Image (cartoon, rainbow, N blue to C red; front, side, top):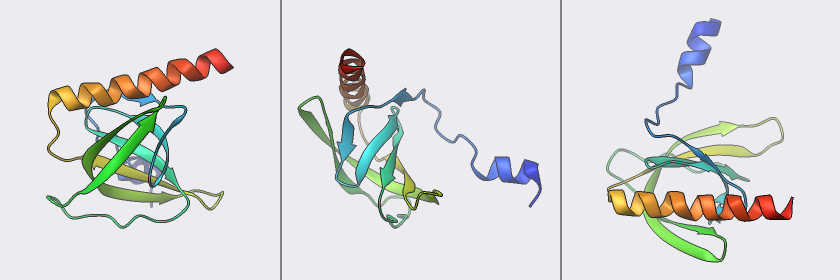
Length: 116
């Protein structure tokens, strides 16, 4: 596979800006980053990708608060350390719910800076 094809294979499909996460998790593992449209999770196991229209409830927890949102896994990328980066796309969430998720992640990230 050519280098250009390799880069295009993992194009940035999220249209919204991402917030780096610390101290944020879900039932599938640690949340690495989150946006209004999806999130990337570090998982110990492969999470099966789901067809368009399908979803599962994902409980995102940060800074002692949690929020449950419908999402579907859209990709799994193996890492050299044996872990997997799983991409989730939020399904049918409102703009208000998306903003609340971003605030939840930002609160946890800000809290992590205090501990550094």
